[in-house]
Length: 239
Image (cartoon, rainbow, N blue to C red; front, side, top):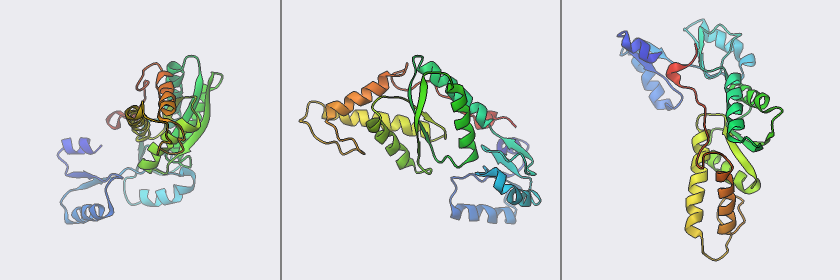
């Protein structure tokens, strides 16, 4: 949307979630000063059913858009993003393709309280129903990137037979891959050394044992590094 306005010659800025408080203040100040004409900020409601009044208050003053998570009962102008339930269904199809013989699955997400996470999880469950793929646990990290990686490291130790990780939020996929690859590099460097307890979250195993667990996970999917994944492209999302 920002690119569309910019192509029309409109002076526009996009206020995204990664912008800190100080920069937000400067952007709003520039808006009042006329440095640009339009400020685009999409809202991703965590609990749409209980945020309708707040959203309607905002919609009465500005053209309100929702993104990533919708609030269809509000007076928002439109929703930009993927149907989250359908995205979960597609993720489930990919899991079944990657694990044709079934297996245990770990789900990673920031929080299950958010509507988009709940919708994606429901779609995933529905797609896996009747298959031999089993969701054994859901790990949440409250958007803490370090915890997202630590959750994967811990899960590989706690569930050595886990066959697949599914990340429901954008950063979960990279966190999963980073955890797996960084652990493997570390453990390979320790191969051949005397038995010891690894200084990794809850992995009380020798280097050879821990490396074996990691290899078991890496070999359980069709691709030795990462199985097919699904994502939504901001520039091609449904409106």
